[in-house]
Image (cartoon, rainbow, N blue to C red):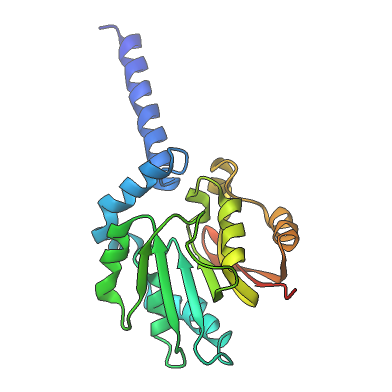
Length: 227
C-alpha cells in the first residue's frame, strides 16, 4: 500500500469521523429525520442529565424564578413543556416556593419522559406525542415552553405555530433559539434575531424579548395577542 493511498484512507476516515461527530453530537441528528433523533434520545435517556450537567442554581435563576413570577396572578396556571426531555423545566419550577400549577410534559421519546419521573418534586403529566401535532384544544395553556429542541425538529416553524395554537390569549410562549457559528450549519432550523423577531410577531405574538441564555442559545419570551 503506497503512502498516498494510506494518506487518502486516513483523511477519509477523519472526515467521516468529523461528519458523524457533527451530525450526531452537535446537531443531535437534526438532519437524519425524526426517527433517528428519537432513537438517539432513547439510547441516552438514563445518562442525559449527567451529559448535560444541569446546574440547579442557574436553572432557577434563568428559568424557574422568572417564569414563576410571570404566573403569580394566576390561581392555578397550566404549563405545557414541549419536547420536555427529562423535565428540566419541571424541576426548575418545582423548586420555586411560589409555584402552584399543573405541568404537562410532552416528548416523542418515552424513555426520556420516564427518566425524568424520579427527579420531579411534584407530579407531572407526561404524554408521548409529536411536537407538531399536539393533542390539546386551542387556547388551553397559560404558558407553553419549548427549550433546546426547535433546531432538532423536522419543521421548527410548524412546531412554533402549534405551540401558539394551544396557548391562551395573553399567555406566555418561552422558546430557545440556537445561535453562534454552529447554528448556521443546522440549515433551515435556526434564525438570526433580526429575522426571528418579525417572524414571531407575524405569527400573533407581541412583547417579543430576546435574552442571552447559554453559550449557544437565546431565550425568547413572548405573549400571544388577545383577539
